[in-house]
Length: 239
Image (cartoon, rainbow, N blue to C red; front, side, top):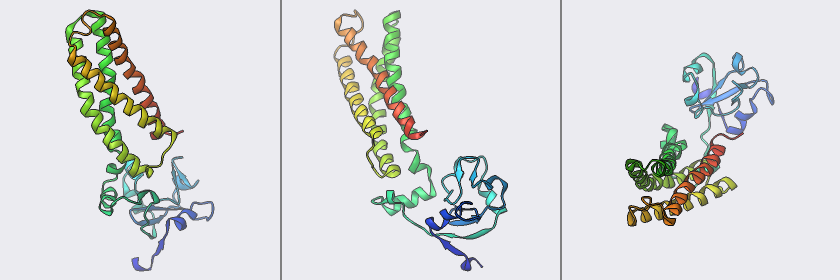
């Protein structure tokens, strides 16, 4: 009967990894399954990526199959609900929502950060095209991209700290420090460039000294975006 099944803590589940004990267990949605007889789990790690003795609830979404695979293996117990130390301070209503829709915990920043990155790259690109060709629509396109940078960065810089809090417990690291500092610097430069362009609509028309400085300022956006992308990728896809 289900009531007779053992309730496993995370530590107890971790011991059933095929090494500390011969049995290989995994957790999914509050249940514990015995996958010891499943060939893909013989080494204790499935597809060289998913370790046994862990809760796979968040991992199934990225697998090429669904949770129906657990119908082929016996359920040996249940998984005790335990709050992750990084969840301290997060309201229970949010944690319940994350459990139902894991994407909301992991992806709000990655889903929104690409827009300002692209706008900040396209802005200097079209400025350079305008200087090379003199074709006015290129400059207007650059200006429109610069305008879009502001709301896009506001959204990304709001979801960034939230994702940092939800996923990393707001723990500071060298990568986080760089991302915070460069993001703030980039926002300041975007606002300076926008004010400058609104105040001097023809700044690139005659390409005097001010125009070259404006062009250099816009080109610096590509460098800063590269730094943000590099450190963001290291956090998302660590070695």
